[in-house]
Image (cartoon, rainbow, N blue to C red; front, side, top):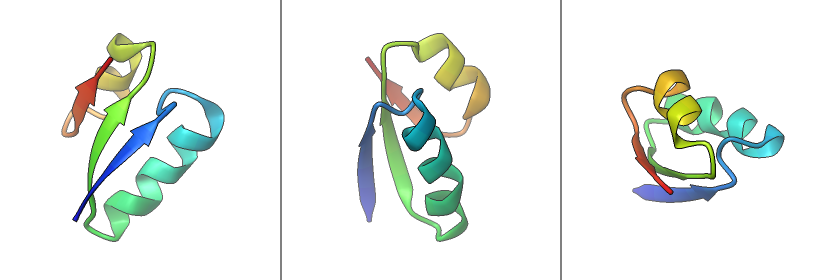
Length: 48
């Protein structure tokens, strides 16, 4: 399963991502600050 997280660089989005990764869910991270997302979650797909 793959889930798109909009607002991934925000408070709620960034808290949900580690939980989903523990459950072996693939995520597509969408947010304004793609540089920070790529640094914080280097193994995940990032889009703007």
